[in-house]
Length: 274
Image 1 (cartoon, rainbow, N blue to C red):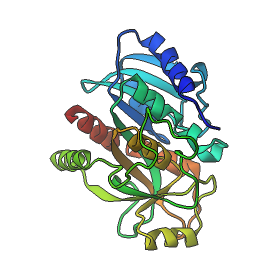
Image 2: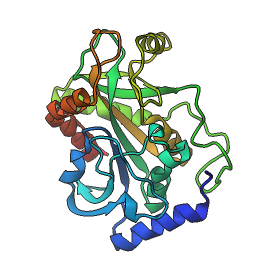
Image 3: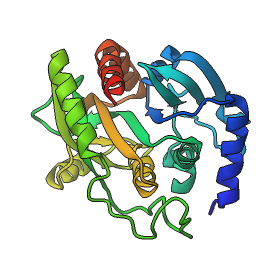
Image 4: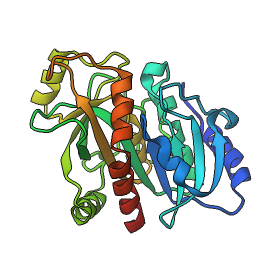
């Protein structure tokens, strides 16, 4: 479907009526098993997606499906505890709807996190990766359809969807904390089946270092509406065909829990320096 500006504004206004004079500046989209950062927000105001006009529900495991507003590391944040995915039956416009609403509410920066399969055979499961770029092929754009000029141009530049300044901030922060931080390209596949070994080999040949089912649509929309973006990935497992073992949701969630302290520590330290 094509959302109208009036629908985006209706969602923003419904949220604004719950926030009083609070204006968020940093939006955070938290992926599988990583939503616990939303529970650490100070003076939280939590709003379920189902209570926001035109919002869709998140059905993926480990996704609470709510927005949490408040303060984290001194920043005024809007945290999406759970995201929508194309494999849930949503269009890409529906998947990325929340980003535009948060932009209308005042957010000018987006931090995206996800758990993804590791494609780079020189790395290991459990590593953290700074996303420097992304590959999204063979599927429509979330910007398909009528352009809404209030958000951005019809043909937006995608040279630096992940902001160079924020990439350097993350590198510096990880060094200071003694956390090894890989850097690479996120390869988007829409799922819900995990990728085949042949698809993983193709992703590697095309330049992908991690593969997952989220993030890319939201980042395209964030870039379109002028937001700065920082992307961080937990490499939760080796992608299909590398270790010749079956993949499962449990493996992803267990990896997120094991990396909880390291991952949340890095995200919070980066947030503090924005």
